[in-house]
Image (cartoon, rainbow, N blue to C red; front, side, top):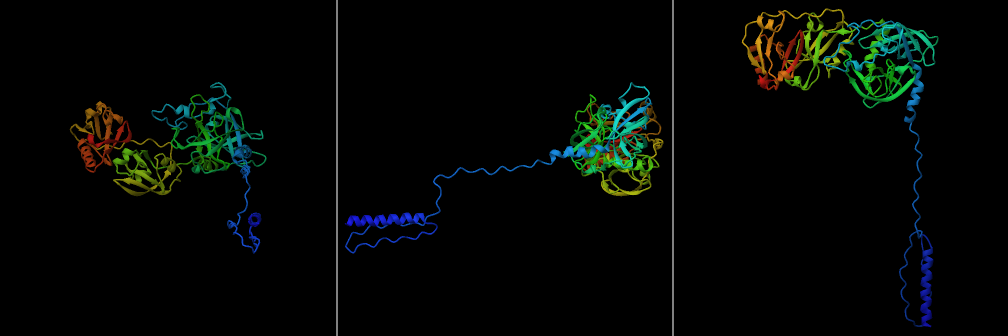
Amino acid sequence: MRAARRHGAVTAVLLALLMAMAAAPVVAQTPAPTPSPAPVLPAPAPPPIPVPAPLAPAVPPAPVPPPVAQVPETPFADVFSQLAGHLLSVVVNISTTQAPAPAKTAQDVPPASPGTSLDDLFRDFFGDKGGPAGTHGAASLGSGFIIDPSGLIVTNAHVIANADQITVTLSDDTVLQAQVVGRDTVTDLALLKVDAKTPLPAAIWGDSTKAKVGDWVLAIGNPFGLGGTVTAGIISATARDIHSGPYDDYLQTDASINRGNSGGPMFNLQGEVIGINTAIYSPSGGSIGIGFAIPTALAQPIIDQLKTTGKVVRGWIGARIQPVTDDIAESIGLDKARGALIAAIDPDSPATQAGLRPGDVILSYDGKPIDRSRQLPRLVADSAPDKPLKLTIWREGKEVEVTLTVVAYNPNRPQPQPPAPEPPKPAPTVDALGLKVAKLTPELRKQFSLGDGVRGVVIVEVPQGSPGATQGLRAGDLIVAVGDNPVANPDEALAHIAAAKKAGRKNVLIRVEREGNFRFITMPVETG
């Protein structure tokens, strides 16, 4: 009986536990049955009944991967095709017939770069292809682009050189005859005009100064007569000087440019013209991924002048300059290599009237800093004649401001004659800067073929392997100044060298004349 009652109590407890586990979220405890009044052994105490947590499945399901996002097609995939569709209509093919080319004049051909063997490879003269040399009616092909709905077209000057007839073919195959509005052989730019029956689509000028290395570009043109050819690439470099002229500031690209692309536009991804494709570097004549375009920052002002007057007027100040090297900067106390060093000044020039002198370094021009010397010619050329402006120069270890009035450049201006020298005074031969120098005498003038008009200290010996030999000095060269100080005899040169050494200079700047040409070089003062 006792066993039966004990069994009944245990059974009741188990039933209560099962019922509690099945209930959620709150389980009410089921009371145990009332025991009989007969004395019995107490039943074992039931274990505590926990409040159950939410039941989890016995076997967790495998994780479900998140749905794969549908990546939209990047717009860049269609950028080139969309741009080409919009821009092809502003690009034209240009063909010419021309008489045999006459001998080129000094005005048409930029001066050759001394010591450079690549000049012939840089310039891509498309006019050279066509019929046999000297045959009347030889044809050339090039490209251009419309800049005004009235029919104004930009191209390269060399595309239309010596042309008897210029034919423009539009993107819809309309053929029109073109007239030359103006050309500028110095920058290799030309402006044409066609008479169209309806307004033409026109390109938009962009700002080439915002172009960065790595930016994508499109080139559209007429390579080998294949009109409407579109190629793409990036800006490989900016401000390239390829020694083709005094204002070189090219954009370099790896977009394919070949014969016939010359004069065509280079577009950025906003569809704006930022360059005019002009030249390639190619030993073989075909594209090897090195092409050059005139930046619009240089081209647009020239085209505006051609549009207005049919010619280009440039400013002139009469200062001949050279780059400032690290050694030159150190020798004159300049913080770093910057600016344009004046090597010579033409008499009766704006530079002379402003009080500029050889040895001055032009640090800024009309408020614009000069980081590289070749920036200055372009800034001067863009200046309006008769415009006074301010220059900041470096002279005698400090910055000085001067005012200068620009005049119009006259290409027929005669070359300046060297100034009349002071009568030379006898002086002994001495060693200076590792060189053997002497005062000019009639005998030395005769020995080194020096005219009566030259002055300075003559170099009579340059030891092999010396710093002077490294700088290219040779016997017969004249030292005309040490730093900013003209010298007429070796003693004066030695005094200025000693002053530079006392001031802690490692190098001293000297101005050298050879056959009427002047340049500055630096020499270590330890050799003095």
